[in-house]
Every structure is written in C-alpha cells, then in structure tokens.
Image (cartoon, rainbow, N blue to C red; front, side):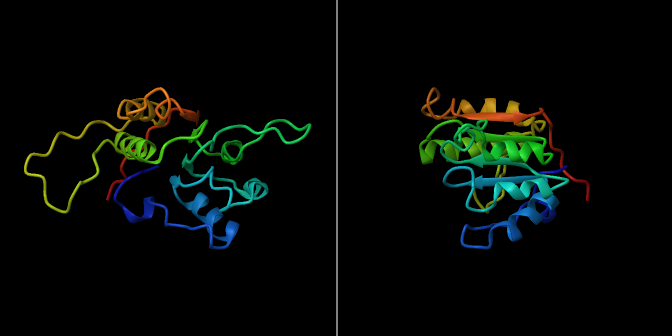
Length: 175
C-alpha cells in the first residue's frame, strides 16, 4: 500500500451530510488509508453493520474524542467502530481512548502522518532551499509513539491515541 502525494492513494473528503454508506464503503475498499478527524469515530459516515460487506478495508486514523473506547450496550459484549474496521480486514486503526484537545491532537495527527510517510508535509508553497534527508517511513505504532512527543499534554492528549492491528509500514508507490 502507499501513502503519499499520488492522488489515487489519498481518500476523497467526505462529510456527514453526504449519504452514509454509499460514500464511505467504496473509499474503504479502494484506499489504503482513511484519515477521519471529527467527533467520535465517524459513526455518522457509516452504519457499522455494513462493514461486514467489505472484503478489503483501508487502515484508518479515527482521530476524534473517545473514538476507540469500547462501549457496553446492554448485556452484549463491548463494541466500537474500530472493531468493525479490524473485522473487515483493516491492517491497523489509530483511535483515541478518551476526550482530547483539538490543537494538540491536530498536531499529533500531522506528525503521525509525516512519520508514516517518512517525509514532512510542506509548510508553504515556497521550495525549501535546505531540505532535510527523508527518514524511513515508520509503522503506524512507531509513528504514533513519535507523534506523542510533540504533544504539549503528553500524559493526557499524547497518551489517548492507541493503535489496534499489526505494525505495517506504508511505502510510496512507484510511478
């Protein structure tokens, strides 16, 4: 799989106002990585029952308050949308176990994506006269660990994100 500037590897943007499963399920089948930033785990975009239809499912960063917290519903086993991603075949899912602050978790997310792709995002449209050597891409758990270091509230916001799945590493697609 690939994460990078190639358009086919990035997921299109979706909003909760769009039809739920009709928009999200094709993205989960076609893309390697879905990045969701918003409230919760993005339950407004997909009905968890429809994940059973997937035979392939993108890895995901579900960056929202309590997006990975398991919830008990009556006498049934605890459940969360993150488990649906894994059952549908997602290699890895990063979620937050509790509520987080916007600015700190946004910085965490950007740093994690940079660590996963092994290159910083450009901060402006101006070319960098002194580019740093590109580090190797990191696995999702290693990228999350590195991104925690940039959080101001390391033991609150920095400790909230957890990675479910296996430590896969993304590589850039060849042209």
